[in-house]
Length: 214
Image (cartoon, rainbow, N blue to C red; front, side, top):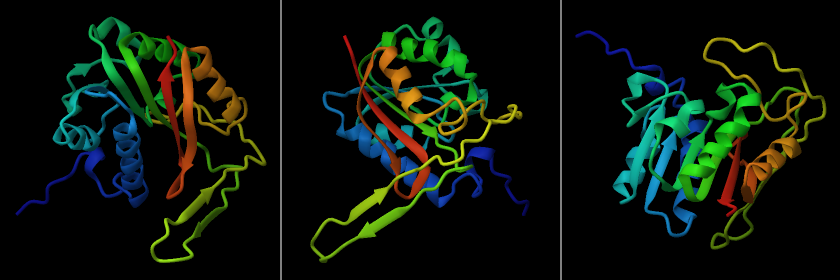
């Protein structure tokens, strides 16, 4: 029997334990947003979050630039406003914006604003190069909720190298891409940040939850 070769989205290298934790946080924050029935997921990869959200009863449509994903919309994220002609309660875009040049990100965030009625959830890579990320996990009693804390300290910001095929154009924590700068960009593009944090189990995925400013 021949061995089936998984696509890049379904290899065990891609489906690391840390990535599974990222899926949990994406689902957790999505389901915590109020008055959400319709969702656009951008950059769907293996469609795991899309599948779970649909099974939860949400009406989910998808957009991706990779035809192999069989997304509802096959398009470059920078053309989303010209491609998507409907509105959604929430847009979910995880580990995707770093795959386009930083100068194109404001236009994409503004496009999200035009097609989204309520919420935006984004995760971005926070570089491990030149950073220190201490973590603390504390559970004093069995019935108590554990205390989890993680903080990234960018002590020695590094220049981001030229983009490799399929790689990142930029990352939080690299020179010129301080966290404060990235958060301010969201604010400038019409999004009020409700919360933002590093994922405890995967601190180099950074969660940003936003509400649309009318």
